[in-house]
Amino acid sequence: MATTIPTSAFIATPHRCSTGRSSAIWVQKAQFSASSSSLGVSLSLKRPSLRLVSVRCEANGAGMPVIPAQERWMYEESEINGPDIWNKTWYPKAADHVNTEKTWYIVDASDKILGRMASTIANYIRGKNLATYTPSVDMGAYVIVINAEKVAVSGQKRSQKLYRRHSGRPGGMKIETFDQLQKRIPERIVEHAVRGMLPKGRLGRTLFTHLKVYKGSEHPHQAQKPIPLPIRDKRIQFVKK
Amino acid sequence: MNKDKIFKLAKGFRGRAKNCIRIARERVEKALQYSYRDRRDKKRDMRSLWIERINAGTRLHGVNYGNFMHGLMKENIQLNRKVLSELAMHEPYSFKALVNVSCTAFPGNKAVPKKEGLSSIL
Image 1 (cartoon, rainbow over the protein chains, first blue to last red):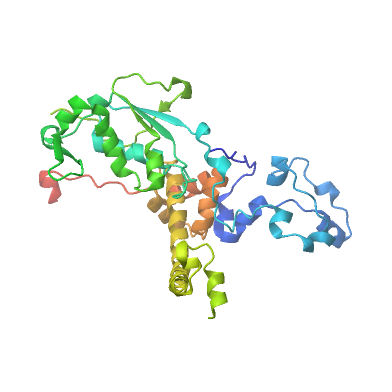
Image 2 (cartoon, chains in turn cyan, red; image 1 turned 30 degrees about the horizontal axis):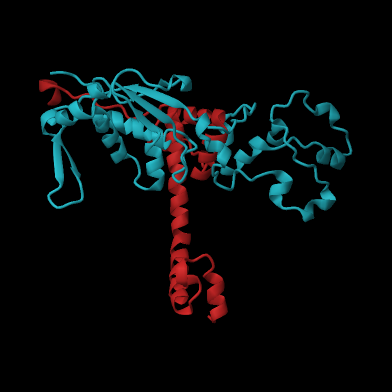
């Protein structure tokens, strides 16, 4: 994610969560001037020297122009206070999904069950593991799969699972079994599995290009410094019986 | 509606639907029907988007959406899904605090261990 998560320096206490409205308190600016004038007593002594509530617009340092109260009517609310993040659901801007800043993951496919591994890969490519998930935008990561020829399937699938393709002409159906295809083009097995789990459509096709499958244990993406893909599935490791 | 109003609503349509009244009238009627239906659908879609985002945010902390919401309901925390999803995205520390609150209230489903043999009858 390209957006910097603001490190809000406040302490979130559970009892404040009792009402939905209280979440607004957490980003409130400390306003003392109004209260001091009404009481007629200077409250400057009570102003805390260190601020417990960080003000987002000041923290970013970006120019939020200070508009005097008399001129507020001329401007829209988003220009005065900044974008309304609590009432409008966040939608990513272009800077939030730049391809060059996405994470790269790497999976070693040896002795992993094909479908379970493909499922986690598809989740990460689609971006469903991120809280900023958006279905219409490519927020996911890149995934590298190595040792694709060692991927495992359970049961009799190695000799019985069929991969079909059709050339478009009559009688043009070509059928291969799992092990025949693994001997011929092992990368296609993992690609076929993951493609079936990604959405079908224009976005799904671009997501598929973020999957990189390789036959051996070498891959040309060392410069991207891929990190190991965190897999939480306990039954993904193939156990020979 | 007269033709001018139809053509005004048909701006941006494809092909003859923006220029020829007979086709534009049909397409505009359909567009208005879709917008009526989708004003209701938008509320559903938004809620499911919030739920998906909350799910992703809680799974980062090892809890799934169902258990998280159950824990919040138990503590009578009235935060709605819109606010929870915004918290998950923009205020990760507070969201972690909410996850902790939910975990203390509802630690999660523990699988009942299967009893073998005689102990299953007892």
